[in-house]
Amino acid sequence: MDLVALIEYFWKLPKPQVLIDDAVDVETKYDVIVTTKGRYGTDLEEVAKDFIQVSLGLRIRREKRDMDALVLNIPPGTKPNLVSSLSAVATDDKLGLSAPSPEILRRMQAGEKFFFTMGPFSYLARGLGTVTGLPVVNAIAGPYAEKFYTFCVPFDTEKDSPRESFRRLESEYGLKFTPTRRNLDVVVVEPRGKP
Image (cartoon, rainbow, N blue to C red):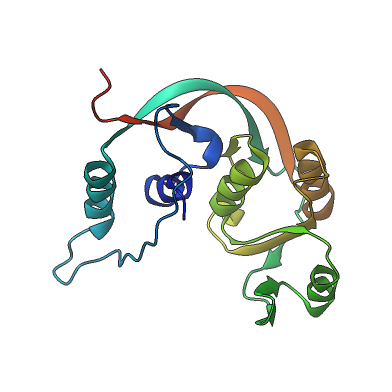
């Protein structure tokens, strides 16, 4: 995994909210295996964050910045068309593919590309931010907030615009993405020696 993926994973922010100084190497790939809880309850994610900074000579900090973003919500008075992520998943081990249904798997095997994630709405927001390059703020509360769902729509990052993925998710699942400007958490990554 590259540095951006490491930071996304450990600092739990999508790619558009990871701001990396031009002097930092983002091309090198790393093999990483982490167990998140130590034998005595130690939070090894914090240890991993420290290790990344020290071993790669980086200073990584959180701060707030005003950014254009999309707010994810369910329109008032509507019932979203959601699929529980406890539903079956079809896989093709040879190609390393997984899909929410055999039909979608066949389409993937034929070369069609999809945005596919399973989890709570926070996973959807973070995944969309990484794939589209636009920060997505999850504003969904209430009975839908913490349940796990499956989200899958056709989306090819090389051909489709980010707005197309949002339109498909709105249409398919009854969601709403509203453009806004927000003060968001970001992770700033700089070489350790930079003033």
